[in-house]
Length: 181
Image 1 (cartoon, rainbow, N blue to C red):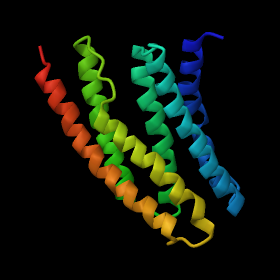
Image 2: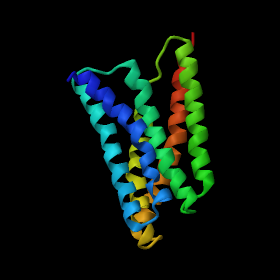
Image 3: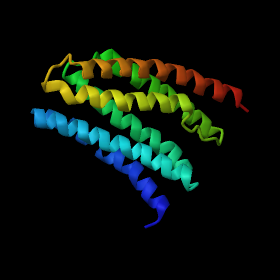
């Protein structure tokens, strides 16, 4: 199998399988929440692996630059949506992430109209890393003790991710404004 195909398949698998994180909505049980957390962790690992392989073997493509962040957004927003549904986090946290992602999407579209690809940058990657650490901590203990130490740690990491989200937006905005035609 072609390595580039494998890398792109990892990215696409994250997009296609992300809805499985919503498993507890359909089968509410402690095991369903554990499965959801495990699925989230496994799909988060695909984010690390596809990026690592693309950089190591020089297979970074425009497709990957666009689809990889999309996969991350779908995965993390679905997990946050589940937590909102269970009243574990405020809908305003989810909306703040969605608004930021829409603004980044607008910047990406503008860049594309200028024949430029706005790839993920370090601050955005840190934001995603914080989310991918936070969310499994928040998904796993839901039926044990809702305010357990792991949930609280996850919640703090999610808030740090939210701060990074808007700092990274300003970074992307600065890059786009600096490179205007």
